Length: 196
Image (cartoon, rainbow, N blue to C red; front, side, top):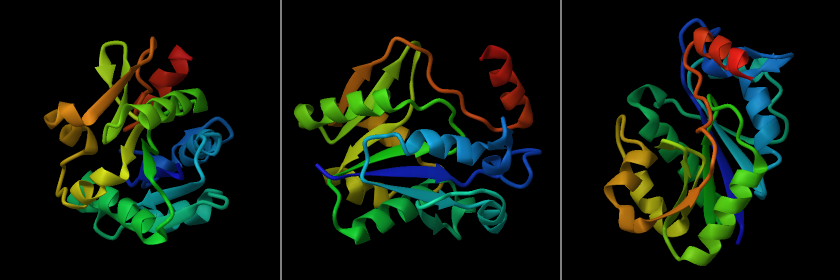
């Protein structure tokens, strides 16, 4: 099974230098830190979708050898960015599944993705999602049979909402840990630093 990693990193954030991707995390930007984890995932290619302050992100962050997609419609909502990423992967024509993650989400270890993919291969379901303590979350594995549905999402509709509406499509994998943190404001970063 050929797998692509899709990282949605389009959020403007509040007080984060024009984009959440450019918030500082340690000695690097948030997107550089998140990509360092995504590159360790068991995927064959990584596609990153940029939106807010995309040109600044390209200038100020080292994205390495990932495939970059700039979504001109990112202000429509996350559905537009998901469509842009899935469309790019479909055009490549070589993948059977996509692991969808978010550029504002910290701590996505490769072992989580490995377990999700292993379960996805054997379940026969259209999608495989993590079930953390108290909540669901990302990253999620989406099989090719669901991609046309993702291309039909609009506005603020999310992958998670689509899957919640169709539980029979979904395989859940339990992880005995809290879901990864999502970063929207600099205060979120401070909160995560205090906890780690």
